[in-house]
Structures are given as C-alpha cells and as structure tokens.
Image (tube, rainbow, N blue to C red; front, side, top):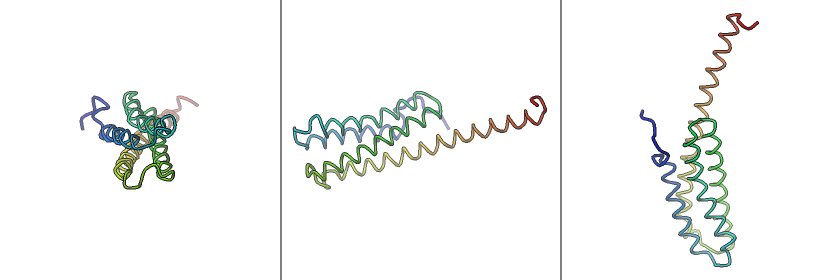
Length: 143
C-alpha cells in the first residue's frame, strides 16, 4: 500500500471540502440578522473539519493525528447542532438541509474510520513497547 503524499489525497478531506461548499450555500438562505450568529458559526465549524483532517495528517504521527480527528468529529457535531437549530428556528426546512445532512453523515463515517485506524496504530505501537519492556526485564538487565 502506498503512503499518501499529501492530505488532499484523503477521501475524508475531499468530502469535508464539499461539505464546506454545501454549508456556505445553505448559509445564504439564512436571514442577514444571523450574519454574526448562526451563519458565522456554521461556516467556521464546517471549515474546521477539513482543516483538522489536514493538520492531523501533516503532523505525521498517530497520536497527534488522532487528536485532530477527534477535533474534526467535534466540529461535525457542532455543525449538526447548528443545522438543527436553524431548522427549529424555521430559518430552513428539512428539505433544504437534506444534502448537507447526508454529506455530514458520510464525512462522520470517514472520520470514525480514520479514528479506528489511528487507535489501532497506537495499540500496535503500545504492544511493541510492552513486549520490549518484558524482554528487557526478563533478561535481568534491569533488576
């Protein structure tokens, strides 16, 4: 399996970028009075998702990658909450948010998959460290 050269090759990043575009389109439907409220917050939370995927990938370690995937998942939950609030306030209909809801569910699934992969990588490294410790201890070098 070849290694990714750049975060832009990640399916999750690409899908999250489309989600940002959809979010910006949806926020155009909101009233101007929400410019510094829901509009700004929805846009910022959507932008946070691919940004954190990119930063986690660029850092290059499983531990920091996992941290940024968790942040991206938090931003996805924030966006979902804001979209629901916009519906409850009757700024947009469920039909108007259907595409965004579907994209958000897909991005979240991808992030969960990335989180599982990072956790597995960390567990594998942790198991190797414990194994080395046990071998060294059994050798009697450190009594």
